Image (cartoon, rainbow, N blue to C red; front, top):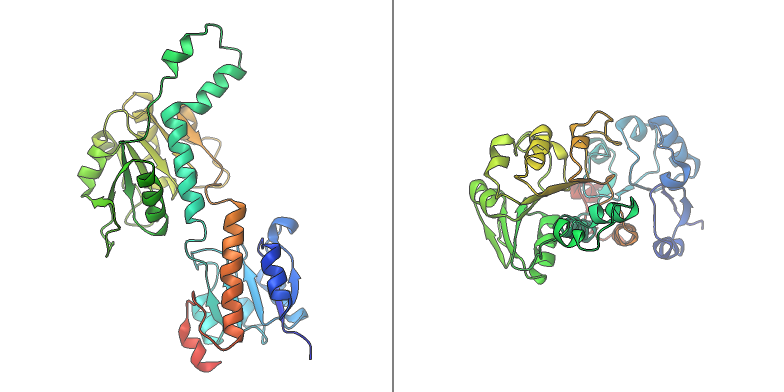
Length: 330
């Protein structure tokens, strides 16, 4: 009897592919290798070619147009926390189980925040450019120009306390920082975290990381007025949408010396628009949406999705299933 077929279109770990290969016929075609995202008809054609029972995606989309064209599909794995890459309502109507991989990159993003914070505190990138550009003429000047600050004993502020915020809190606490946070939706306060209102968060944080999702509630939340409330010499690190912050006001605050710097990893467009106001400050660390881009992130979500696929085909409930109601109809 032939093995059921699974189509993997996401970057996936070799170990998880080997694990699945004992029970499934695998076609692996990562979008990072093909540099191509499939349209609805092509996606349906790929699934129908092998009568795939499962498809695993990261950047591809699965719309109703695809689901209306396939009959074999019973499982969709999303290699990310967000589930907006799949029409969940349509998948449920077609009795297709959908699983995701929550917190897959929480550790990676937390370590990025640490690296950005240390970069700002110790002026690492600026000092590197100073040496490479040949400006280091006097042996003593850098001791003044690049004298930094240590993070131990400083206050780490967190705007948002989801999985990433909690990972950041644990990491920074272990490095001797005090952790303060604001999250009106938090039900249980993690150990070593002090919840504050927004005003107190801004006035007390030495470093503020925005990890709240970008939505109608948070867009423009940190406007010029709120940035002016922040402690002089403090810094911002954004690993959710940059539009949580008023970008013009941020540049003005940094260039005036009120804020010591900022790091931004997620922009309104990818790549960043060439006329972005963020280019108007050299004390802004801009990275191309790589906070969660680690080998371990791929290993983590590969294992999560693989284990849930195996549970599903063993007639057990997947751990991260989005639409458990379909299990009653399969």
